[in-house]
Length: 349
Ligand code: TXA
Ligand code: MG
Image 1 (cartoon, protein in one colour):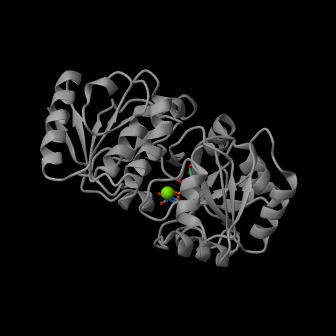
Image 2 (cartoon, rainbow, N blue to C red; image 1 turned 60 degrees about the vertical axis):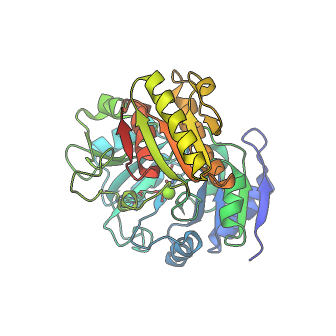
């Protein structure tokens, strides 16, 4: 399949290209597009054949449900059996934006889209290109992240093209995304509502609207003995090719420890990468050093994380050491992704 590439920005949206991409989706084709979180791999959410194609293009197990993206708050109503007052309140508070709600699905949504579940994940993104595309496509676009299954989600079009060229009908290159980590997922079918995947919208923010909010115990630990409630969270997502370890402790000790590991690993022929911050970037020697940004600016760390993991793959890094972050606020989402990338390997000095 020849993949068509459209290029545009939020400020300069190309109406004709968006119409054309919308047409492709209406006809059952696949179009990758930018959102404010990560790039998505879109298909018509109400067309079972499109959902099958999405799974095939990603190489993704078909028991892993897709998120249905909408571009108007009221379009949620047709997708669900009933919109509870809590669901309405949380949608009004955070949409359009990086939040996905799990609700009981209506008959309109095919089981191919929900991976066989009776619930549906719904998100109304804020990204102007995404919103206009969804509108042109008829209002309901199923979209997982636009990476091959098992790779970090793409935050720039370059990595969408790397994974999806030849597998989809079109890719919209809209530049770098703003947030860099996937949306927060909250299950609204349980009481109290439960966060299944942490993201930019934090537990504290959700609690201001919903009162008590629980967090799936598997988010930061793999020792809870439970299976994650979001089927996709059980897979070893976000994994770079290099073996990765998170190192926690006093900053100086962490730098000293990682430098020792660098020397040792290099002597054994490994190519070593380090994920660090503005505060520590100068303390590491003789490795592929990636600075994710200042510790005081977690948004920067979130935005750069997946690109850094991808760059390590590009540069054939075989061992990765990452600094640790406090799992509070946005740090919870950062640590969730880091721990998954590291297969939960974390040492405390
Ligand atoms: O930010 C995002 O959410 C991006 C952009 C493209 O919108 N999308 C995204 O989709 O991250 P994906 O497919 O990579 O991740 C969706 C996650 C998976 O872990 C999946 O198992 C979970 O949502 N999920 C979807 N429907 C669900 C449902 N009905 N119940 C529980 N989990 C669900
Ligand atoms: Mg994904």
